[in-house]
Image 1 (cartoon, rainbow, N blue to C red):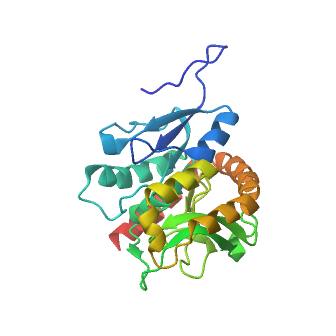
Image 2: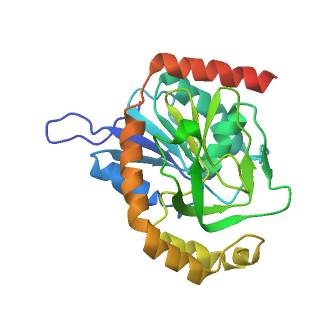
Length: 259
């Protein structure tokens, strides 16, 4: 049974389950802000054979981050494991957040499709995300934020679309009260943006991708606003625990998988 490190009063520090997909993966600004809120980060890498917990009883939330693989890579044991794990998180009432690949895995857990853009467009760089009517109380109009993807997700049954772009209409969704999927990357810091655009610089030639200089300019303009927005979003997300809402979401998603 998982137990976080003990605090000075002998009580375990509250923990957030963090699932990442490479040995060098970093939860970035999301990790920084969660630590600042007093949480221990229980970081696990199923891609390296690390186990996921049997219960979410001792976790205050779960975040699944992005990675270079596809949500359609069912031949990879850890991808199938994570898809099967997500309904368990929702059913427990534990707040769930999927970022990029994590959002796509949430969609797949509900039977929805994940696929490349039909015209081959990629979002790599900073793009304005527009809230839907249902997302206006959560996302500013617009939110200029970092993206790095060439696939998008359809909405699973029971999901509410919260934000869109012209190329990818599903940029943010909510499933029940507890689960959010974000196609974009609020965790990306300036150092991460520089590292990604250097180590995977060949991807900057893909249709729709932005040049590195343009990313740097956008970072200088928008990063402070992204950090402020994320702080408010995480506060709202962490307050979303709802056992009954989680069960309702699982039921809707299960129906979607069987459809």
